[in-house]
Length: 72
Image (cartoon, rainbow, N blue to C red; front, side, top):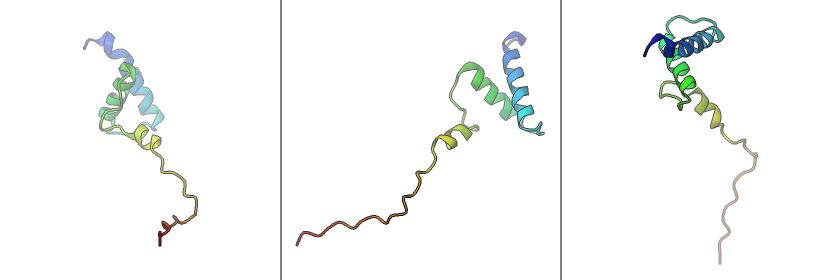
């Protein structure tokens, strides 16, 4: 990939890095996320935060399940 194609990815990766408080050692993760976003791809395997947020457990109703009625 040449520098012209890398620029949007580099810019987005930098934004992600700043949004996360400029942590050290996460450049590969930020690059993968940025590349995914720029190219409109699905989340890559190491970046599943969106998937977790989308699959919230259902709220409990606080009721116990009813037992089936027996036919006698």
